[in-house]
Length: 232
Image (cartoon, rainbow, N blue to C red; front, side):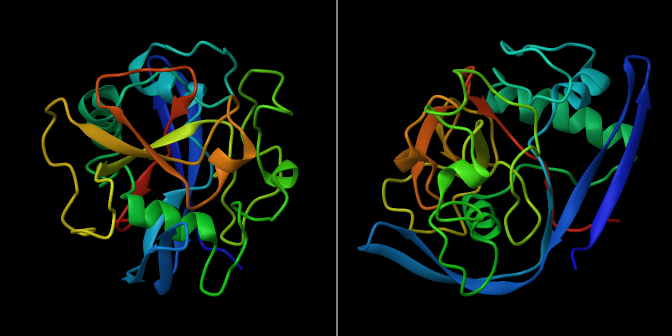
């Protein structure tokens, strides 16, 4: 049974709600291939059950930069800087100081894997078509969130649909300083992205696959989901 928290939001631009899922504490092996592996102990945290929708972005900021329009589709074409400098500060203000942020790379992979002992290659299945929108089934566009099967933590679309920005600075060897690579400034560096997208092969949607992008870039295959260390 999952523990959810729903947040209702009403502004001059509209109203909507979104849900976070409690991700329980545990340990897992973070890995990229067979060589780069690191066992980590993770404290509990909260993560949005879906990618951030266009309706939520519009309600917070009064704009919609997405290429593929639809209120229940994930917001795309948003840069790391726009998320961190505009959307999250405004959301935290509207919800009276809630500590919303992006997940770290380690938080993202732990959540995507769905818990201790889970061996799925994608987030919730070994079959990509059960859980993710990718090059062969997306018709070359994003899809509304939460249409496919969730993973064991109740999270949707963590394989496919959109690449997800994280709060971790890129290093080709993630095992180096994995807990100290959290981005604390907005300089033009590269941030880790995870999950694959509507425009990717199944291999790019694996829970262990990682890429990076410059924080100022905005692309139609990129989005994000909200994370919080606690719900206060």
